[in-house]
Amino acid sequence: MKKKSPDLNLCVYKCMESGHWWTFWDLQSEIKRVTGKFFGEPTISAAIRNMRKMECRERFGLPLDMSVEVVDRKKITGGKGYKYKLIKV
Image (cartoon, rainbow, N blue to C red):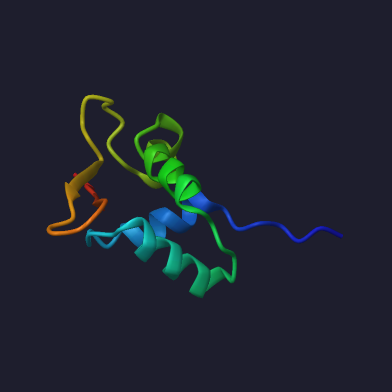
């Protein structure tokens, strides 16, 4: 029997619901620690984008108004990449 893969959207939401800033690498490390499953940066990026979609907004109780942003992004100071934060209005 094939082992069921963890729900990445749920994993990303559970990490980000605290409102703290996360990099792809932070999320990758925390998800691996909790689930034992490794997800690449493109897959984690897609899960972060999914938070903006209606399916995830409904599922996780985020604002349903599509004009309301639910993910904030800022450049990593002195580094490469971005940090992301879930905005729960």
